[in-house]
Every structure is written in C-alpha cells, then in structure tokens.
Amino acid sequence: MAPIHPDSEPEQFYDMSPPKRLGRGRHAIVFECRDPTGRVYAMKLFKQHSRDRISREIEILQYLSWSSADFYRPDEDLDVCVGLFKPPELLLSYERYDFSIDMWCFGAMLAAMVFRKEPFFHGISLIDQLKTIADVLGTDKLYRFVNEYDLELDEEELEVLGQRPEQPWTDFINSANRSMVTDEAISLIDQLLRFDPKERLTAAEAIRNVYFRPF
Image (cartoon, rainbow, N blue to C red):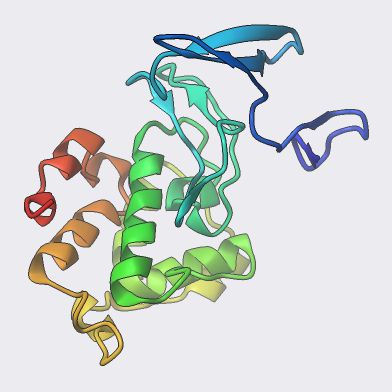
C-alpha cells in the first residue's frame, strides 16, 4: 500500500497491486476498478487504453498496472510521481503536463537500454535528478525552458545546477554498448529527451521513426 500524496492521512492509501480480474468474455476482459471517490465498478477492457489516456508509469521490462494512469484533460492540474523516470517539468513542479511525460519516460528507458546504463538518469533527490539530466542536456537549454514556462528555481537550486555544457550522446559509447548504439538510436533518443515537452516526439511520430523500420 502507498499514500496518495506524501502528506496524506493514514487512512488515505491506495492499493498498488494489479487490478483484480473478474472474468473474460469473447471480446473483452473484465476488471474491478475504483474511481477517485472510492466507488467500485466492473470494467470491460477491450484494449489497453484510448488516445486520451496518459500512462505515467513506464518502467523497464515491466508495466506496473494502471494505478497511475489518468485521462488527459487540457489545462487541468495533475499530480504524479514516476521516480527516476520523472521528466524535467515534474521535477520543477509544473502540473499542467500532457502525454509528453510518457515520451520522456520512453526516451530515458531507451537510453538506458542502448547505452546499457540503467537507470540512465540517477539522482538521489529531485534537484539532484534535475542536475543529472542537466549534466547531459546542458543548463543553457534547462534555463531557457524554465524561463519560457515561467518556472522557478531558488538560489540553492541554482547553485547546485550551476553552468553545465551539453554532452554529446557519443560520449556514452563504450566497449560494452558499442554493438547497441546506432545513428538511428541516438537520433531517436535525442528527439525524446528534450527539456521542452513540445519538442519531444509524439507516440505516433516515434513509432514511425526510422529506428523501428527493421521491426
């Protein structure tokens, strides 16, 4: 069990276990589900989810269930925690995010697989996680993103981040991962791991990327 929010009361917990499967029909699987008010329903699942649903919990080699998934409603504040896959906008407490957070998670997952460095960004706190990302993408792009989205960094955070140059993706190539790294893989990773959510590929664009053509 885990709290809905860090400051939740003891009774405000939700179940992290997979959804309870109630049965299976010819065209659908039936699961028990619970809405934000606590009411329980039986839901027929015809396919994983529609285009207006954000996963918010992409993890390497596994899918944790749908406990963090939510429907996307433009301009609505949302809340989520995705650990070491958390994109920059969430590290900076920007709550009006969209589907692009899943694309950041996918990019971080792909970078970890290609460069054999898992997790690819590994910080020990929110600001350290942001610093780890800035070590790769550079602080110039980070500060430009912060200014464009009217986000805030306090003096202590600015001191931690400092000035960091952008690091070429080729710097991560070594003897252990050389066989995995291709120009197509680097290009795809670069188009996913962007500070500005608007600059990231969409899922539809990513699946059409040249990297996936052999598959």
